[in-house]
Image (cartoon, rainbow, N blue to C red; front, side):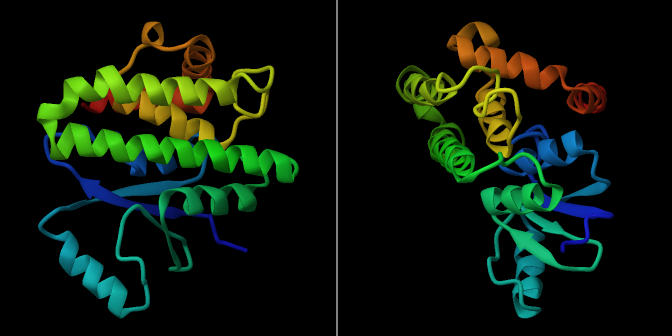
Length: 210
């Protein structure tokens, strides 16, 4: 078992970029929704290499963020594996059978595909941003919409939320898309997630801190 009595979530401090940007927020949303006590630690770019090297020397092999650190000092890395680990420990956010798990994993993987394009064209090559919005974003929206049409409900599993829903939702917010910009099922997903009590509370608190 993993000790989730208190968790430290580690990610990057992007400076002028809002703290809800990037892959760490996928885990943050899950932690908030599940009501898991946690601390969000943001590492400055110039400080991260030293921290990374110290972690690698102590047995943490990935050398990347996000990372969760549990109350007993264990560290777990990589966005989707972290979400999967938390979900299995909590007994929710991952469905009820192997078909559910495959569906959740597929959508999480597609959301990560989208993130790679977003990061490349929004941060590394900002001059490509308009082309990204016109070509890449519609492609990813349409592909994910097809998955959300498979079952009757706002989430990819239907009425049960999964960690993949947080990843899809966060890509939409990272791109700064509004419900009017989205196909019907994804628009419903955004509205439903933002109405979840712990997420609504978190978003209200986060908006006041910016």
